[in-house]
Image (cartoon, rainbow over all chains, first blue to last red; front, side):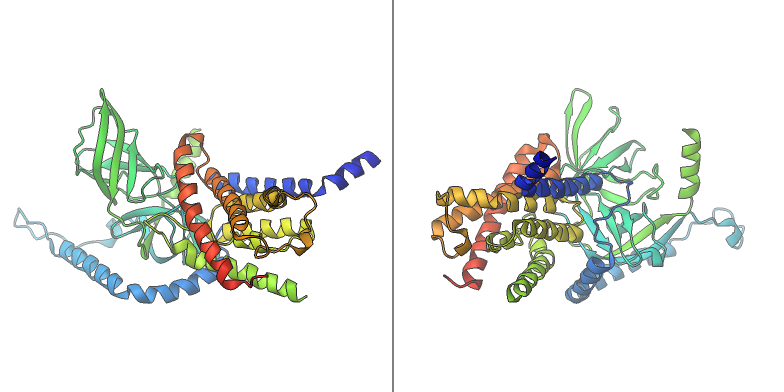
Length: 274
Length: 167
């Protein structure tokens, strides 16, 4: 017994170091697994509050740019509205009955209060939380394209796992043919992401547009991602397809959060199959 | 009492400086210096070691809270806090050095530089290894550690020289 006490006395600092270090490693490993609820995140009141204050100062400097972006998007949407299909037959089209419409996705607005893109695994913090109807695993986009998926959610804030993260696999497809692949990031350049698992017979060309595939329950189909920058082929197989993002991940501000109203149903179906 | 207050202020100040300013530097698009570890270099050695280890763990964890990095800052900061004394005694080549009198400004500039360089590089290497978490990316980890360490060391040296008194 005395031996043990002596041992502890002798190595007490080393033991303290070991205990604390294992705590730190535990948090690190927990952070690498996606679905676990996390303790260390910036969505809590203190860190979220500080980021909020800082962001309210910072925003002031980007007002001009944001205004231009918003008016650009407005014009785009107005142009879409003014496109009316030709009536091929002379019959006047019937009145729109709202009962015939079914809403699958619901959009929320929000803003990024802390942006990260320099690390290997990047998380963003947004100023929307449970109070505003945000839950985890909702898509986050802006008018240029996809940004990420919500992760930890607190009352007023939430963290977003950026597409610039090791564990981010987004289902995407080519716009001109319906071949699906998966979007990953190799951690090198924040402007370029990689496309993998594309079927070997797919015809691709530099400059082809990549959009979200809608095969996951997070993003609706057709959200912009980027264009093919270059690709390598070995035999028939694709080795590497680099995609240049439409979004500038270093300058993000206003975002939309997409909630899939059918997500619960899809999850239930999928678990029932297993 | 005065010392404890001073240390607390430094602690909070360094965390805020790091997360609000230095995490947004993005030099050349991807390099952010880690200046908060200056706390480890400047913390007096005469204090109780257990408390120092705990504080450095807390310091790293605070940074992790802000940057959503799990526990990588805590792990690397704790590690350099643990090896600080042995690194220092091997640099000074004295076994019975009077550590009670130690201050980073009381040793020669070259030695202080070596001390800061070794600890900063170790910190950055552990940090990026845990961030990338795969041996395949060893090249990226090393190059990122070296470039970031260079920036961090320069900023920490400038900071220490301009904000502390020579003894």
